[in-house]
Picture 1: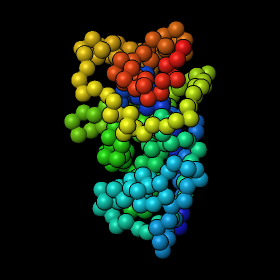
Picture 2: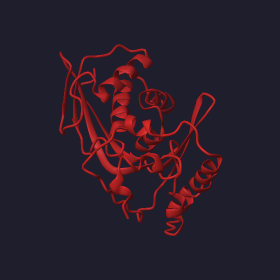
Picture 3: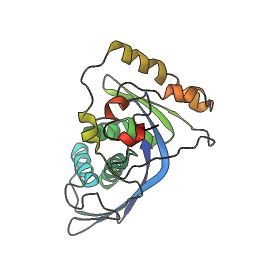
Length: 234
């Protein structure tokens, strides 16, 4: 019988530049989750801004994963040590989804299957760029082919350093997606295709001139600038 499960999940940068919904980069900042059998559901969180009841995303992911795996939902206690600020675009929600899903696999006694894990996570998140990067680490490109999920992982050179600018305000993924158009211009699609193809090589080769070009985007960043106007001030 399982007495305790500890899951540590790194955050990530999803929608990496021109890699909207298909490319993510993990970061060395971790949310930590502890699951224990309990007589009553209990959820404790180390920071504000995260639900402490049944609406908690980690718990909801745990429930859905148990249902997907065909196992009963045990009564548990969840403790969350949150080091990644929610609503900051650093993959906090993805860590909760991964942790809840991994815990469901372990409580069910089933071996973790990445295809199944990704399918469960997609039901919760709607997209896989952040899930794949946080679960696999490094730079990850993810795609779907028929019923399969395909991914390619790249190790990031240690010389690559990321600096975060985190405004005091936050914005949920749901709100950020509301401002995106349903249709885009062909020239904008071509613009992004030409640049996203350059991201892996520019990072692997540590090409400082190529990387800024590769990260240019016309699919999501221009539409979201009003959500974070200070980030577009030069």
